[in-house]
Length: 155
Image (cartoon, rainbow, N blue to C red; front, side, top):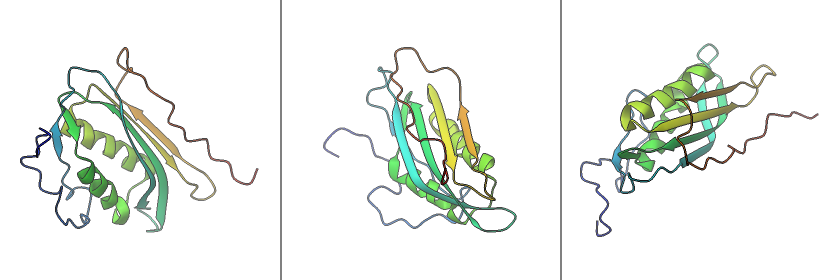
């Protein structure tokens, strides 16, 4: 690429790529962070995340917000989209899905900091929100609110 971004070794960007069959089969890719000397926050929002209930097989829906302060690496966004999409046919509880996503990103990126908010829509009349973060926000990093209001039904 002419803009100096290192893309050697990426297998999905710029290619027709099918949805992985499972999160384990999904290939998450990374690129070098050209601004690694600066502490800043990157946010990914997936308002239409889906997975399956591991007991009933019924679909579950969530609004995910992933914030991270990168170190040497950035997650390649197409690979992240495909990874998140791979949960569509994956049976797991809300807590497992949310924390598993965070753990895969941490293993890939070794970020300075990461948090994920999993705002799950009601199942059985009860919404479940799952939150995970690696520690305190690094000093000097501006971190906006995740912007997802608590679930309110008709009341």
